[in-house]
Image (cartoon, rainbow, N blue to C red):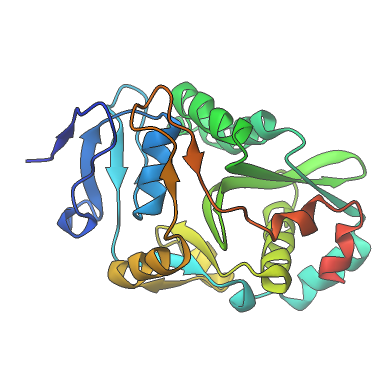
Length: 252
């Protein structure tokens, strides 16, 4: 039976107790407060569910990850980066980027980026933990992505393209900033052929958890009560390179 989380503060089952089918389903219930979300990511767990469902928590194995140095930047993308007239911004419209990530799915089966998820990650953004990249071409929004940053790890949540290569440009900037300024790993969560083509690979869940234990040992909270707890999360220093007005030099 799937564990139901009902404690006032986040207490998750061990990730290795997650189901094999569906791969990684760990528990249901809980909340989407910063306390719950930060605790989840720190332990290799993330929320993913649809409208009308309870909050579902996942920790799949194998885990798909992308090491910044492994990003496959094809020659055609390099040419577009140099001559496409792209401009990339950091955190200038986080709510809008989340809406753009949700929009392409609306015409099909809806989106897992529910109103509750949108509000929760916007709150994380206001705390300086969730971040977005937006890609512009000729002043038009053409792509972007968002996720959670803790120290050298970026937990990717979603990305979108409105023109060819829009999301790839965002990923090129993200991996370049991490590669040159101390970032170590992008969590892609689940395997997809698209991410594999971009250089992502799968690793054992235990290996992924070992990475988090090594790189994020000091994540914690200022108070045990969820209504007053302030997360203590190591700064992602590599984000400063993306905030620079001249960040185009990253991909030249």
